[in-house]
Structure formats: C-alpha cells, structure tokens
Length: 168
Image (tube, rainbow, N blue to C red; front, side, top):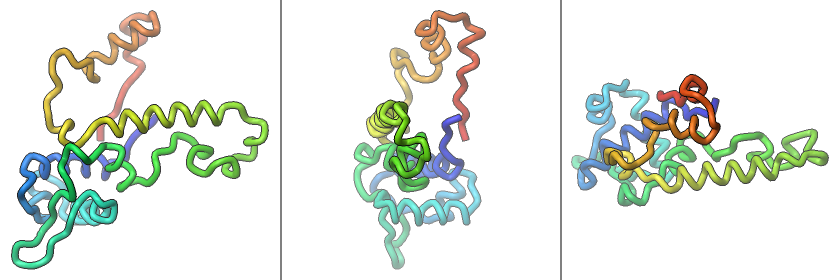
C-alpha cells in the first residue's frame, strides 16, 4: 500500500486552515484547537514545515506561523517531501543502483523511475489551494475511482472495490 503518514495528512489539514486565511498568523495551540489535534504534534509539524520552507515562523507579540508563499504555489509534493523526505516508491529510486544487489541485472528500475516520476508530477500539480476547494461534479476525483478502474480493467463493480485508498 502506498500511503502518506498521519503527520503528513495532518500537515495538509493544517496548511488548509492557513490557506483559507492567508494573511493571518497562527499559533500552534490555535491550529491544534481548530483541527482537533494534540498540541505537541502540531508544534512538531509546524517546525518541519518551517524547515521545509513552506511556513514562516514569526517571533514576538504578533508572532506565530504564516504561509511562506501563496497556497496556490505550495504543492502536495512539497508537503510530502517536507514531512517524509523524497518521494520514492522503491529503494532503487531513492538510493540509486547501489541500494539494490540486483541492480546490474535489473530492467525494472527504469520503469519504477518512470512510475515514480508520474506520481511526483501528479502530486506536484495539486496545491494546498486546490485541496481546500471542493471538487466539481465533472471532476473524476476519487468518488468515481471504482467506475474508472472497472472501465479501464474491463472488470465488474466487485473487482473495482479491491482498489482502495486509505485516508489518515
């Protein structure tokens, strides 16, 4: 299963709150209360997002956290990388040929790289601003995933249910 970790999911939710009020400064405790998350977890996430260049930290009486740039310019790929490191589906993507003992005889790594690049581009194409906007009815989205998978595989509805995306 390909899955982002819980803290990355929370980071996206926190950034969504901030994107809805881009000119505000937010405290860790205020964000924790708004999202119903533990304060220490939110503090840790905010620090990682600052280190990743997605947030600014402000000190003083009017301190807190703010977006480092417009929410439309912060991609989901950047959030994942700030929270989890490089987006790499296999060890050979992240570590190169030396990460795998079979690299010299492997024809799969270039195709894994192609798949990894496609996923990265898809994540790069969705911004935090996009995430806070509701999907339009004409957008395929995940709500119609079963139908799209079934149609592309030529299978039945029962087969499409085998493809599941977990959240959080």
